[in-house]
Every structure is written in structure tokens, then in C-alpha cells.
Image 1 (tube, rainbow, N blue to C red):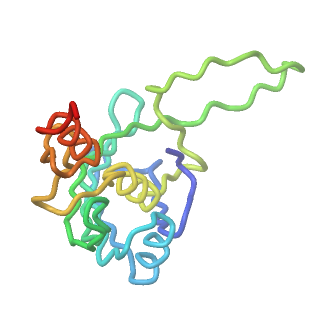
Image 2: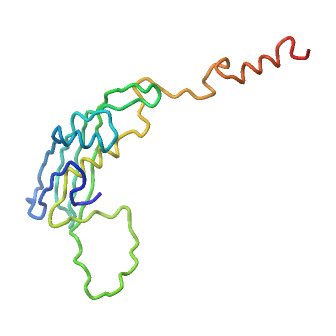
Image 3: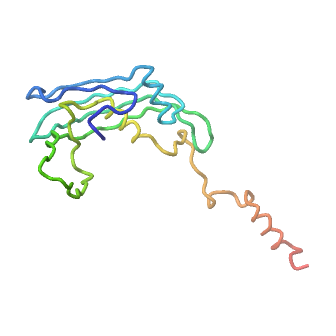
Length: 178
């Protein structure tokens, strides 16, 4: 995740002058933004995308906690039928002020990237729309199944369903040795 705007749903928020007690922020995607996100994510439909966040500074870090909810339509990978569902994802991320660039070094040192490190705040703001979009994408099931539908494994199928079962019956039947 990055602090700058990315994608069709952008809600930049200044964070350098947040009140000491923090602030609640709600963001909602417009129908046009939902249509663009639907296309980006390969959804059949995205009717609603909303997020509710609490922003607060603590120990030199900006904490962003909240929920992202969306009403979506996806295609079932088993039946190929479209089905509606509601996505509800918990959000908890941290940001830090960007470190000033080093001007004394002519060669960039190798930097090991920590995947748990907080993201940097760019120009004193973060983009809550980008955060909501990212958690929407992360919350999508890559193999969506309609409620009540399951994959049938080979062990669960009836033996008659298998072409090999027909051959097995031919070779074990009464005239198999003939």
C-alpha cells in the first residue's frame, strides 16, 4: 500500500494536523468510481463501496483502523452463475513520516525491505480511497462460489460418473474372462 493516490477511487486526507484525539473519516465511492473499480477487479458488479476509518497518531506513527464494506456480484467458479454478496473487511495499517532524502551519499546503499514496516506519508497526506480499494481487492475470494455450492472431488463422485468405472465393470463382469 502506498500513501499517494492510486487507481480510480481517491480520497486524499491531510494528516499532519490531526487533532490529538484523532479523527473519524468516512469515504464512499461514486457510481463512476464503482464502475471503474468493477472493471479493474473483474467483478460482475460493484454497487457500493464504503469505508469508515479512525485516524490517530501514537508513538510517532499514524494508525488507520476501520472497516471496508462493499456490495458485489461475482461469477461462481462451479456453476458460472452470478451471485451477490457483501464484503466486510477489517483495516489496520500504520504510516510514518517520510525520511528526508540523503544528500551525502553518491552510492545508494542496499536496503532490505521489511514487509511489516509502516508505509510512508507523502506530502503530509494519505489516500483513504486507495486504502479502501486495496482492502476490497484483498478481501475478494479468487475462486468465488455461490452459497451452498461446493467443488465435488473425485472421491465424492459416484463411480458411474467415471469412464474408468465403466471399463472396470466390463473387466470384472461375468464375461470378463471369456
